[in-house]
Image 1 (cartoon, rainbow, N blue to C red):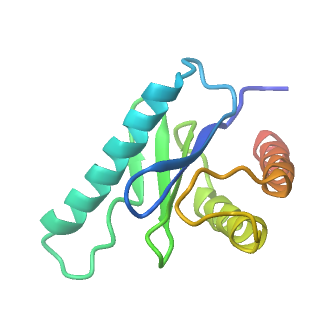
Image 2: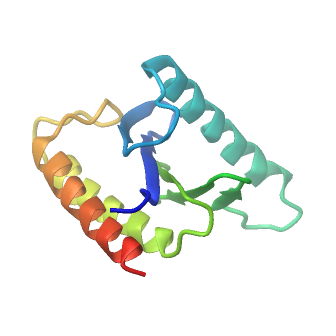
Length: 143
């Protein structure tokens, strides 16, 4: 297969704590501390962008474009943030993030053993997420 379009997925709780991280083959794999720092930094940048926006109703940064990657973000109504680091120009990441959010509500929030705001350790979430990511990769690489 060709290159991987999706590098990594982060889920951050409303307090800025990293509750889920999955690496999908990024060139520079991060250790736990690096992923925690990145999640905290993104949470802060997202909050600052809401305050600095010259327009009312700004919900924060949805897309950060860099030379070598794009970072797409979806924030739920409860403040949980889902963000994907992917190849530059990758399309339909908003749809993917909303699908991941649906998996989160179905398999994490409805899990009676899951404690809110804590790290996600739900096997059904992991399995269904892997299926969605694989399906998305096939669609992206088939372009």
